[in-house]
Length: 148
Image 1 (tube, rainbow, N blue to C red):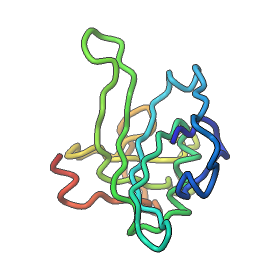
Image 2: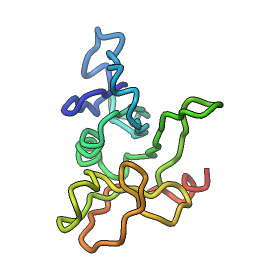
Image 3: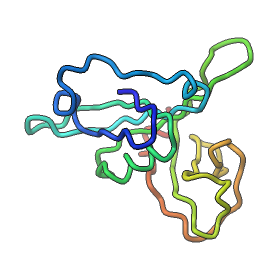
């Protein structure tokens, strides 16, 4: 499922949302920004089914994380467009995501993250941010996922 615009949050099984829809439109401009891959479970016909969404907007990812039960979130990864030769995209599992504290500058963005085994908390541009009290933990990877 591609989620290319803020407010286009759907975390149900596709057959419950849009049974006749066969594709999601991708917006070219959103291909330039970092994407997040969100892996989570949904209930469908009384059982859990794995769902994967590509999300292009931090605010939309934030909305989804607040609506999906924490136990159902299996992993979050970040895909960044690369300019140098080689693979066009860099893929990194996110170890933890936080909502910034009210005292942090708005320039930090709506989400702060820790990539894999990187000791630094970073903003959306991957710049390190200093510690601040009052951050709200939204997601933390299981120890088995962090080692991947």
